[in-house]
Length: 138
Image (cartoon, rainbow, N blue to C red; front, side, top):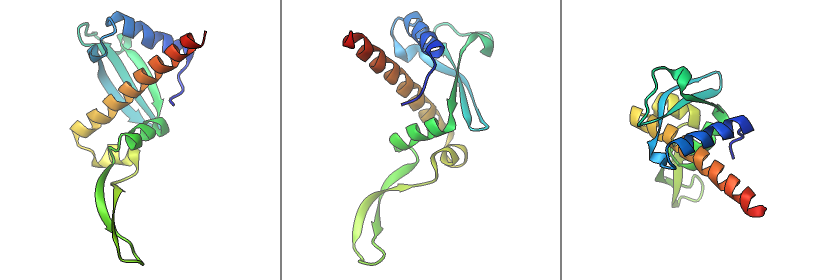
């Protein structure tokens, strides 16, 4: 679960409302990863902004981004291994690299886009599920 400040939750809700609850209209205008933080700038596909200052800026810790990559199995593939001592073959997920290193060094441009999109989907899903659960609890 990605920790979001109340201010950021409110900003994301405002964006969701402004796109008429059509999440496919929310797009990543730009991105940057450095110093253990992934920064995403979000905007409405039908209302492009002239500068990044006008976009919604999300600063996500790299460890949270790594969790999403691992949960989506983006940095691994299903393969077979042989047990080193008992010599039997078994299916397992084979990790290509640690999630953030995979993103920076091994992933293609398309795979990087998939990882960023998965992060945005994860944040939107988490926000909607937690907010609806809080309202239902009333």
